[in-house]
Image (cartoon, rainbow, N blue to C red; front, side, top):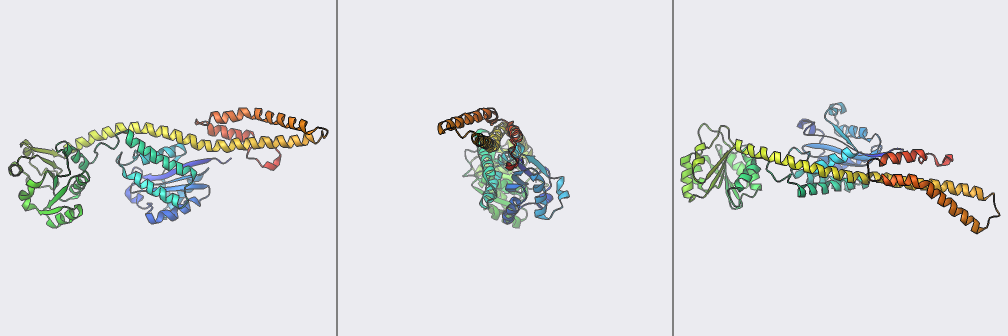
Length: 429
């Protein structure tokens, strides 16, 4: 008997560099025809593709040997030499494939554990697979279960609560100083990549507005436009500093850009309302002495990295709880999946025994034509009861193991012992 299974083949940020991942990524316009090609492969009954910047994975449900077809499919879809991909690909089969999919949905396999973006991407790509008819009963349930697992993990653990990026760590520290961020103004000094990203994350965390200053004013204009903020010439910083509740320093300099004297003037104009400073530059751009001023709270990149390290540890502890949830949910799914094989086996076994009973009964009764209808009905009941008693043991074993990992072995044993997959015309029992 050919057994049905689930296989997942793919690569991710851990197994392949970005230049490999981008060569095999499925753009939105390419996923739909690729899905049709996937389910057209021999042995593939259902299929789906998960393609993001950090991973490309193909999951399929089908018969034995389908994983080799899927490996070749990824290479063929992109015109890539299969041998070039071989060192980057991983393969998960059956329970391990389900476990991997659940972990991906719950962001346990992400570059940043607990990030929420992957779940939305998976939902979109599953919906596309369903819309073209590539998924069926098994993958429908598998993907929907992965979504509910992710939701359960986010509600039952604190895996996404702690900041693990510079911007979110800065926002976390700022919330310890200010009651709210919505009415606060941030000033970005230095419009490089790290500063811009930190400003974006502060805005995402609720900061109301942002001022952007840079040595090159045109760059300040460009970044301010991207952030929906206001650009400032760097030589006007003293005038606008009193407006800033949060100041992000991301510009290296031979001299300190913010000094105690400059901050003292700003605090006086602010009527001593507190200021939160984050110095991301190396060498530092804010004089450490400003931290001695009342109302100034200065943190440097090492302070933020300390917060991030602590929070990563907290997320790791929460991830352990999440893994326990995943394990239980994989068990539940696999019990359901394997029971799909037990039901048709039970039906086939009953049908085969009943066919043998009816055939032998007809042959026997033809030799005793003197039996009346009542006697024939009695013989019918006796033979039916006999078949039921003979089947009681095998069927009880199948049902008893319906909810443990041994069921596939019992299904296979029953089908072999009673020759359920033999040619029905061979007359064997």
